[in-house]
Image (cartoon, rainbow, N blue to C red; front, top):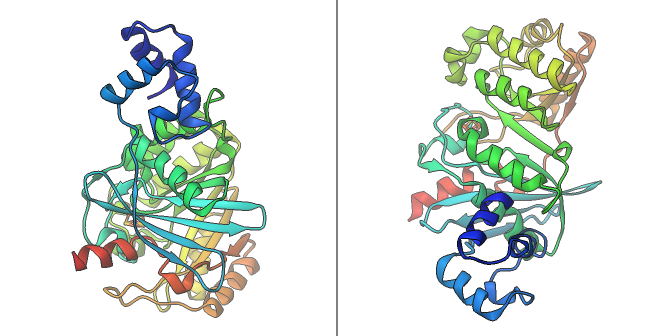
Length: 336
Ligand code: SF4
């Protein structure tokens, strides 16, 4: 619940209005798991809250800790038995959490394990917040950045994601600046424009992976609905409205998108954009014959730099624990 919703619920319980803020702070600042822990509320109110409301939890179904860096991958079981993944990563400036926004995904990107088992349902705002709370509790860390880049397409779950952002950044609660949040999308054009109009201040990362419609249609079905011309216009609109430079994600796939002609096509596509390209050597997925090495990503980065496009290669974290999106959930679903 948002604070105004909680205020309304408290009003209906005929309790004084300030109780709503007390409860809200117990939930979002102190992050208690039981109403009985809300010690400044009268006992009778705590009992009533316990009977009328529920503080949900996520169960850790599996947890994999990397032996080569501090990455931890969680497979969480939701209250309805579905599974999602959350990945905790350590960067120079603190802990960053990659969260899921849907159970499965409809988008069908060829290189992605999240989509293989299909789409089941959207996550609620509360299930997104709980990924942060449960992980912080288990790992004993405080997360300073969130990326919506786990299982699911965040802009395909727009309303719940917007509600999540509202709760995450609420000055009366968690107070996280949305400048520390990144949303990754495969390119749902109307929603990019809507996000731009909201001027949230977050970073938009667009998964590009190919620079021509013919090639992109083959690996990202969303391109048939929203082709590159429309996508680039929406990204330009996002930049103009928010002043925030869009990041373009490009998974380098050997023999698919990493030769000089691909780099030229990408440079041509981005020549009028305030662009930064983030190269990711593609994660191997058992069902797909895709692979790449860091060396091939470096070679592609050099092509881009020579063409005047600013690019970096994303650090690979948790490579020993299947940190690619959807792999753990997919394997677990296969075994149940
Ligand atoms: S890359 Fe993202 S949008 Fe594409 S199938 Fe995977 S989770 Fe869905």
